Image (cartoon, rainbow, N blue to C red; front, side, top):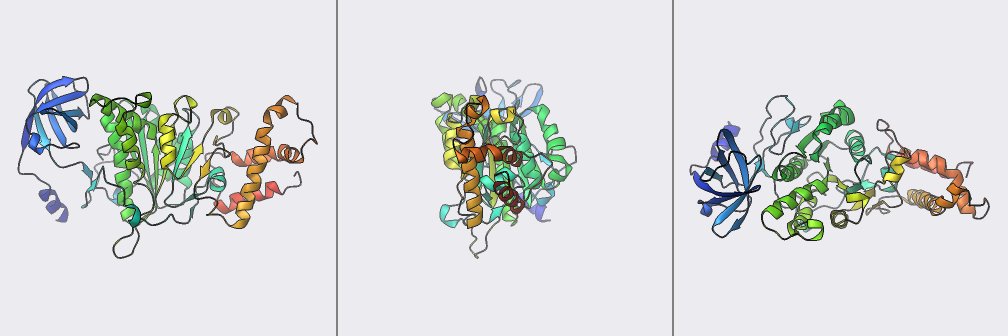
Length: 445
């Protein structure tokens, strides 16, 4: 009965309509009904011989509203009716969504039947919790991946970025985190993914066990920019619902770069001026609004705390340039970054994380003194080898010239084996430190 009452209350007795005035590329200009329109409002546009297409208001020009469709503009004709839905977009998730795959509208696409709708509506474009109402990051989160657990330790409610080029292993790393991380629920946003890879990621990489506690939001690369952008908002809205159920949530998004590209398409179509590498100003405005929604849960008026959203966002660096505009902007927003390098992947070590270039901003505060010493020792050893790597490979380094480098050469095979990890292998946080401590104090040292 409550669901029925909520559905009736959502009905708007007033229907406002406008008309299509012009179509320019992916942009539809509308006239009429402006008193009921605002940026972000939804509409439905009739098409000749086709089903109506959903659209969103992205701006205004003189006396006309500018809309972008969530589908194809084919069949949209001058004078076609536009029915305006003044309410902003929202989603009504429940815990029954766990184990399901949805699209950018929250509709199931896994063939398992309809989804239960919750009573509370969560706006897709919600504001992040205010800074003073937010708790601090919690205790350490066991991710199950040795290289990250030890060298870039993540706390509950922290936000990390995974920076890598295409084909370096981001998706496999995310699947390891989705399956092995110590949390209650996982929300995975696949933004702009290749259509072929979605089923592979869900069935092979994520697996049945990983999917049981996950909700996957999918928008493939062939879908309109508006839909790709909304998939990112949908991912965060679902994570916020689970957070409010006092669940510890791990939010994985692949990738933030494709979200930025979708926003760039929308901004350029709406007439925004391009800036660095063609990205429009709203791209750099929307990035913090999206990423800041993850983090420690807000403190409620009664003093209780909502669950944390630990966010891990991948950034597809353009041409392996880790200083390109989106990577640079995201790195400044997040609480740490994981750098994956093609050269490491090419020599067969996965995950291809360069631990010397990766950092977690909660370290070393989340380590005890012994763990801090282990990480410091390991970094010094890896750095000593990296500094002399070229000379060592060509045989120009003479043994005995530097005791620290000699030790690094002896320990390097064991350290490389420690940093590499099969996708089905799991190592706890404490076991990772114990193994690294054993390597650094081995007889070979």
